[in-house]
Image 1 (tube, rainbow, N blue to C red):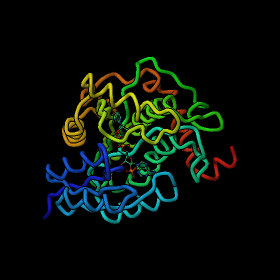
Image 2: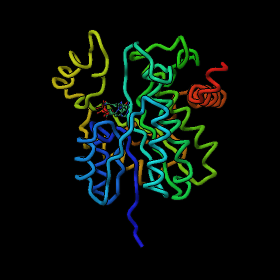
Image 3: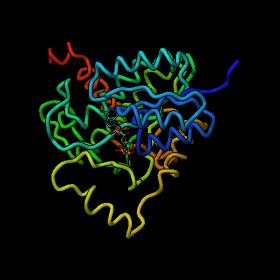
Length: 282
Ligand SMILES: NC(=O)c1ccc[n+]([C@@H]2O[C@H](COP(=O)([O-])OP(=O)(O)OC[C@H]3O[C@@H](n4cnc5c(N)ncnc54)[C@H](OP(=O)(O)O)[C@@H]3O)[C@@H](O)[C@H]2O)c1
């Protein structure tokens, strides 16, 4: 009988996802590396070892997220760990094929649908979901209209709003699906200036201009290896279900994300935005 555990890491073809996939591989895990670039994905899977594989998927398309989920479930009928790592920040621009603002689509809609579609394999393994978020000020606020729909804009504020929504969803997932034996946590990995984070913004872009300079001069942030160790820690060690892990340590979630009425409203909004018939009727 094999004891090898299986993890899915989205955005595993570069940046923190790649570092986390390799760290899990070193810890003996089989990793299903999800991404868009088959060449890079195959390399990461080969390096991770333990029978790891690349599985292609474009998280900007909810049809593709659903197709991807069934492919993952076929390859891992018992799934021990799902790391919803893929995420980013996009300037206002053309929406996705589903009509969603891109920051919301990648940071909220895709992990929501992927997780829902993988509940059975996760429940079979009594597995865990790690939603990768960011550090957010305790009193940060957003409205539901700013999150999704015609008033949702891209940019850095959309990034923080969508990550707040993902923390809120993590709490709801624990509340609604925890009875299936699945554990949900949110992780802020720290500031890691060496990835391609922010390069997806257009126009005068601080992430490609001043940020690398300041990061280097003031030695800001941590290495990808330090961040990857945080992924492994919250993905494999004992955790508090439903919690917000700030740089790998439990912290109180931002107040709005911890508010039951707000997080429940976020769940309903995201459910509606990711269900074509319900979006059309709204
Ligand atoms: N770096 C930081 O300081 C920092 C701080 C806090 C939180 N985070 C979070 O950490 C996570 C990883 O970020 P990172 O720093 O590693 O950034 P990154 O280098 O930009 O990596 C983002 C990953 O997401 C993937 N991705 C983007 N769009 C996708 C799509 N439509 N379908 C499938 N995959 C897609 C990318 O794949 P491609 O290679 O194909 O583009 C890439 O692998 C994100 O959720 C980010 O918000 C980062």
